[in-house]
Image (cartoon, rainbow, N blue to C red):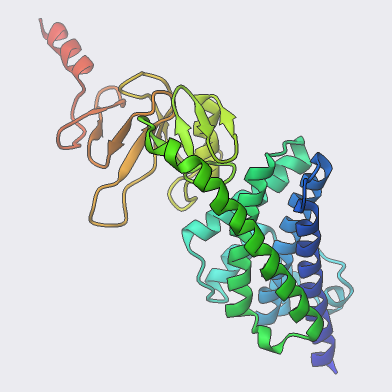
Length: 323
């Protein structure tokens, strides 16, 4: 009897999640208004979270609780409890359930969740292009997640029909992304400054030139704002810790333009060097190993071997002091 009750709860969780996703797609269809975009973000975020929590409860119902140690079956069955946060949900999926989620997918899911938080708390809404592109990536991950983790062959006919509907409409979103790229690709090929992943739509179309402007979705911010958005929305949290948690925010003074807009993306995981330092003001880029930290002033400077010794300014100052 207990197993049947648990199946009913599990079914409702997934059913509600898929229904939220369909509602989000409805709001994004045609020519969405500002109100449509708002509910598209809210409903897709909710649907995404419920689908992920479905996998947690299949592992064990207590994992859906914010504090599993205080989980009670009675409150679980009535739904009268505080559920796990989105970040903790992702952590439990990988750490307890053994679900493989790449840094790229994790960052995309968190970026969309961040859209929902900014909308709910600050009323900040992105463009239809940004929301559509971000939604397409989140949905693409969810479809694969459902196929690999939720055994869709065992779902009821209603959920199967809903999933089919979502897959068909996802193809429309992906077609939109392809069409949009055809319109901007040629122009991006002639850009002379750095082009990075856009914090808003997660497409690699954000041009840095005295600020940031995404050719895909229209995202536009000052160099300082864009650098901060990029660090919090694009870089992996496994690489940096924010000042709030006692770590170092990877933002420095640029050795070229001297603006406090140089983002350190961290070292590469491969044996080949990558673009590690990017300035969001002047658009200059330095490969891994091309900049070093001065042992005297702590500022980054161009170094042939990337070894932190002393920058030119401090070297000159030391010579004058010795005189």
